[in-house]
Length: 296
Image 1 (cartoon, rainbow, N blue to C red):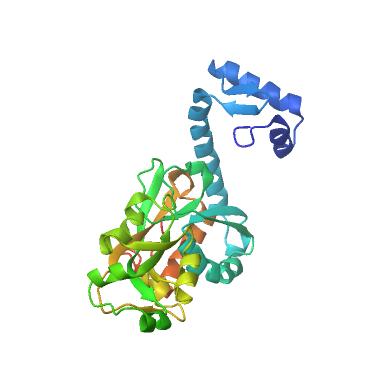
Image 2: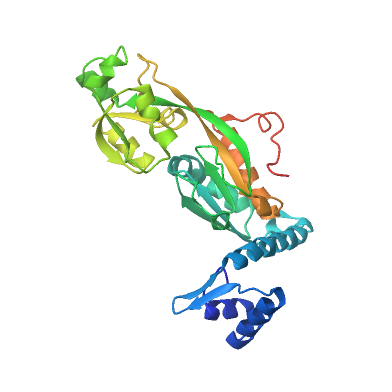
């Protein structure tokens, strides 16, 4: 009921009639001596007491799922879905090209990919695995550094030939950049460009890396891109006459209650493998030598 917010949906999921579900919730409320749901025309929403009980219920659910999956002796027997939240660049240039590997390895899993560049305000009930650009401070999650990378300036060769030469950071003030719209990234990552190039001139603003790459390839402006994306993208060259690189990292995040689930561990292994195989990403210590399974 907490997940669906609708009596009809909860009854359908449980394969029970609506009156039975309603009666059992009422019995549960009497047994704990507290109201667990607000009921109105818009649906059923958990009270504060209901949310506290839900945490324990989900822990029980996760423990039972972990026990069931622990007995599976083959990747092909893993069932269910895994919801993965990933930054748009990580999705478009690493995960999407690796989907065949994931799907072939775990044919029984439904993999839900959701692009998101910010995870600080997300509920842990909204994802099973997340990759974050900043180390999150959220509660009830297990966080491990996944990989290190750098940001750098890129251009189309034709752009460099037809625009003023670049020898110093000061020279970059005569050039224009494509960058994210404000609010598309958490503040530390959004400010990376301006730390590297103070007072950078922005001519195109977007919320995706794909659009930034396209604008840079067309010679409209300079792009400030993760080097693992820029170095592997055709028709782009790194501006090496001036060093404006900035270090950054990816973090692997799993709600603590899901960290023992076999299907979650399986997908995190796939993500680690894809990172390890990409030359431009430096797998974090703990993965690099042993290719350790995350969250075991």
